Image: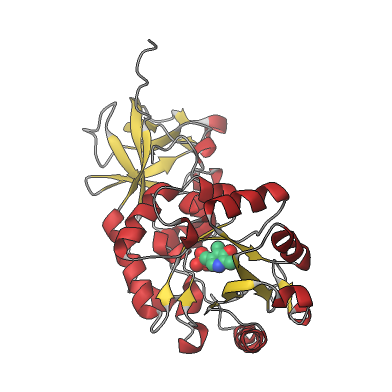
Amino acid sequence: MPPEQAPPPLRLALDADALAANWRALDQLSGQARAGAAVKANGYGTGARRVVKVLADAGCADFFVAYASEAAALTGLVDPASFSVLHGPLAASDTALMQACGMRPAINTLEQAARWLDAGGGPCDLMVDTGINRLGLPMAALGDPLVSRLDVEILMSHLASADEDSALNEVQRLRWMEARRQVPARRASLANSAGIVLGEGYHGDLTRPGLSLYGGVPRAELAAHIRQVVQPQAAILQVRDLSPGDSVGYNATFTADRPMRIGIVAVGYADGYLCVWSGKGMMRAAGHDLPVLGRVSMDLTAIDLSAAPRLREGDWVDIDYSLAAQAKATGLSQYELLTVLGQRFAR
Ligand SMILES: *Cc1c(COP(=O)(O)O)cnc(C)c1O
């Protein structure tokens, strides 16, 4: 028997109560519509199995993933018919998987419509492009005979600029309304997290928040409703004492001007703690601020322990990861901050 593996010295704590509360808040803000949940990319990096379990318990009944394989990895948690596969049936193997499991593809092209129908069809969703020019059928293709043969559960479209007060939002809403007149569907859906606060006209029957479930605040109107969900934490691997003139890390970008104690923490850019935090990130323990010193390395980051000199090897620190503020500080989007966190975090 191989020896048991040591637990990793970094973990991504997930506040399940905050996640459920965020979904309930978004569901409320969706008015007459129900809120679903975008759980693609492993629940925005937070761990999709846990997320689906928590949200299903909170009452969520619709889950959006990018690939059929992502939904397949979540089977056994909820009814497979609660999954919508946003990228659609990309190949015969996808189609077979979705039909065998009972998931719905979002049909994005006439080719996908033909692929789905040729394989026997069944309930599907339909993505209509109303102006983002990403995935989805163009409005002009809605009259195609293939479309009329589809059994559409959710007719959806996706907003390009819901996080801004852009004229494009209303243009897209009107096109989505026109698509609803042309294509019979059991439900209609337009809004992502930010779109939910654009108003009732954007709600339809179902909203599709992602970012805000996980604590992201794409519009100021959401700030009062959304709680932080993830908290990256890492252990101190070594404590050392510096003398004035000693430098820290690659290229010696920090030099101590006084005697100081520092901690070397088990997180680096290979974990998604990117070099943008070099010399400006913040970690915390028991309410004390522990600023990042010098360059972030691949697996290690140095912090100033002046405010908490009792911290020792093996103690854990919280990495400051408040999404909206950190996005502003780094120029990374809140989406990137979540999805960049690497596989070495225990979830
Ligand atoms: C990712 C995604 C969402 C969720 O968007 P957020 O901005 O994270 O709320 C909704 N709909 C589609 C089609 C998506 O791709």
